[in-house]
Length: 90
Image 1: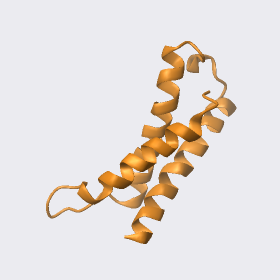
Image 2 (image 1 turned 135 degrees about the vertical axis):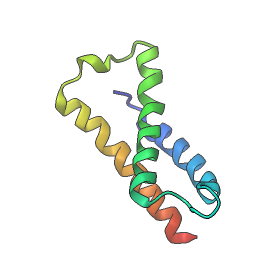
Image 3 (image 1 turned 120 degrees about the vertical axis):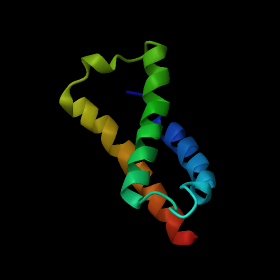
Image 4 (image 1 turned 90 degrees about the vertical axis):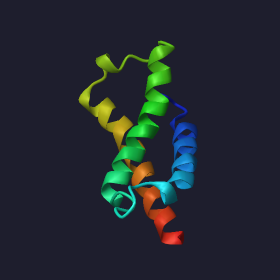
């Protein structure tokens, strides 16, 4: 797992905050909080895990269930929190 997950999450959150007003099809609006939070969390996780795997810093195929949970939980929390915070201040 990447020790710098906070930087990747912050970067993804910043980009998502800038994109959120422009998401959704005309007449449909932005995706619901749950969907947007899950997608944003997945983007943050990919932003930290894919480069670390490509650099052979980690090997996700060798992770235990608890290791996966400890990787998923903060990224998911970041995604949901960012979406809620952004929509609260709009």
